Image 1 (cartoon, helix red, strand yellow):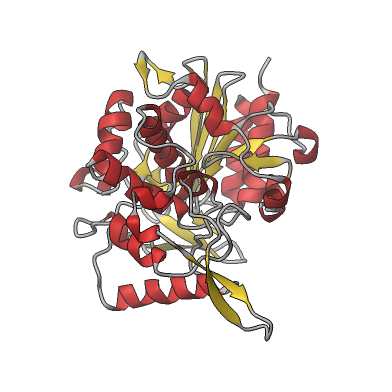
Image 2: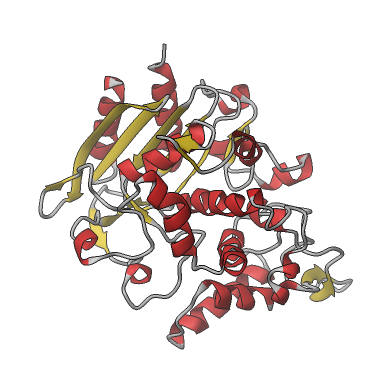
Length: 383
């Protein structure tokens, strides 16, 4: 695994101020090392206790949390979403009319719970590509201007009032689906998303530094986020930090968690071991297999077209390796995981009982450069 250290040192020379990587197999830590700095200006090194904004790696935790309720019979994947979140009853969909203008029609079928997991709901993030994205963007901007204190339910209701980008179940689009899944968890469990995760996942796995909020103690261990210019200059930024403050009510199931390399490694190894870690059973092995199974049809896979994920499908909130030849990967079929906005990454392989976690905090995140190389070096080090 010494090649991993060399690889990370190379990353730091060209990109992030610092990074960390951990590899576990069959319940044992095989490798953990760090390169560079958590704060470049103060020359504070990355350590085991450094706290990171994991952004969309939150999605894997949210989907695992929802699957705990699935195993308890609290919902079925094919249930209509409006049975639990009534604001989604009779959703509208944007469609082009004969004059190439947009109109709306009632969806042909309801959004199903599975559509949230698989990003086939028609919900989007804010953007400019579609009218749905533009409406979401305008609503988010207006909410910020009004200084509204968002929570999962208010976001869910706002999204439900915006027509969908496509008929539920017909296409794939990355968006707020897992934030709405967080609202579903809150309604079904009667707990906040943070409470549910703490009691059902973080507490049992000993993930003491994973939460939606910074404390006085973890604030001092938060890795600085850097924006990288084309010439390699790194500028510190606090642009993403407001949601972690004491006044924020929003626990984002799609992007809101803070964690450490050690904490998230325990979570990843739990999934790699079929849902159990250190005697704590979180999910059954069958449910983990379901999570990692591709959920997309050939038509939907055409939308899931990120170039560095060629050869991968999409499961219940995770990428999943279907075709190693197309991916150019030496990993096992069924290797799964996800990544985060600032370059964090998790890899889970139940076949090898192997997991790996990589942490950094930089934009642009260089994920298409870093993540395939990390995977190749890790598998190349196995016997």
